[in-house]
Length: 129
Image (cartoon, rainbow, N blue to C red; front, side):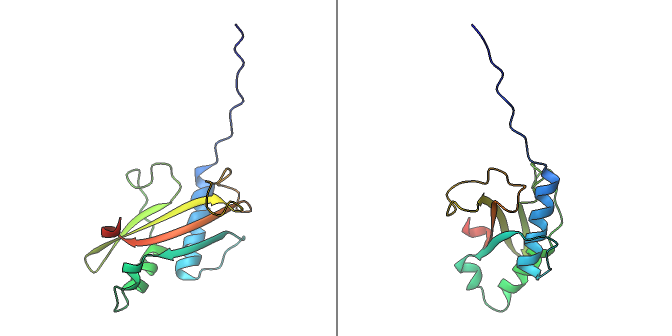
């Protein structure tokens, strides 16, 4: 019996993905210009849009300013999830990475390559989860 070693796929560098996720989040939420192009879009849930009285704007701004990444909320080191408190209400945000040409059907094969990765930032009330 012959055992053939399978080539190991390269693991993406979490610090590269984290930097790209942070840059995209700051662009989408705060309008901070990017050093290099990063594809993506931002979505907010209906309940967040309907919260009224500037709540959504506060949630989007807090999402863009979020920097509290710890092993409990960022185990892979990708900076792809966070929770913020707005007026006593918990707001979650999540970044999902897809293959840019897959119509959001397939996860990014090389998530550290901004040319082939589409980021989707979703901001929602925790109670919508």
